[in-house]
Length: 168
Image (tube, rainbow, N blue to C red; front, side, top):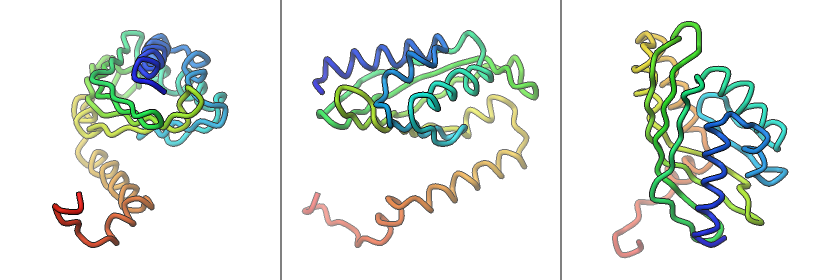
């Protein structure tokens, strides 16, 4: 995929997410695509990705949801973009609270579509903006830490010897 093609896909992706159009959002993915969400978990296949966007995400985020991508880069099969998103929570315990989140999105690409999506965001900052109580916040951050440490890529990283500056 070229840089221009990725930017076009990224525009479709963000616009569909902002509209809460799960079907259009899922069409940005390959039929077997995977969306790894740090709140709602992994969703595989277009139907599951559409469900996540429409029935989970937009259930909890108000109609003012925004998601903009900046500084996209693409090498053909992997792409990244920095993002800012914001919404007003509809979750009963946090209804009416506005949240702003920054992050980096990673896209694995195949046949002009996303086959694997993941992101790195500061969810702790989002939870503080919502007013999540400290004990609950700690519990969530502990779970995220366990999940990070259990990932095969993290385990492989920790098992390797430290790289020297020359090998980079």
